[in-house]
Length: 192
Image (cartoon, rainbow, N blue to C red):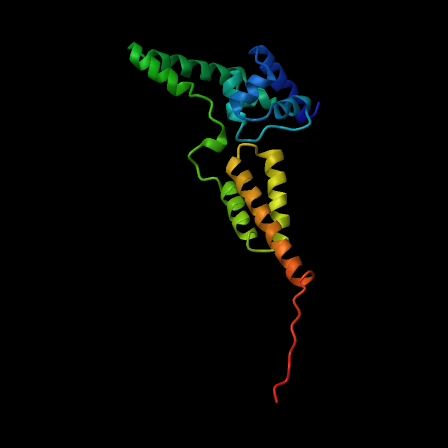
């Protein structure tokens, strides 16, 4: 069995054990249901940044999702560490705080506070593409299609791509009008 099939079967099995639908998983991770379906059928795989959230959602380790066997001694040491940390919780207020820290709300990786280079580069490309007539239009169209298919959570990028496409179409029309459709004729007369 290859790694993709193993991962897909583990993801499906873990989701079913938690009695979650594909829609529920997609909603919690802020991805499309089709993405979850592709992961479970082996036609795609989750992003490396999404694996920790899947692991937490399904209450299984990333190693288990990836099909790596965890030795009994490692599992025992993990269990004993968890047991020791539970002894430190004394008051109900600390218990509630520790539970919140141990199980934070699932926040997809694109909402983290870390600087997102992909997002910044797409913004820069769109900004620069608005100044170039032909290439800018093609780049803006490509970014829009790619973002629509892969990164639905980049709503600002989609809006900027549409604006740049409209600017590109306007520039293209102006260029065509100026070069080919201009009916203004210029006559040069010699003054004697």
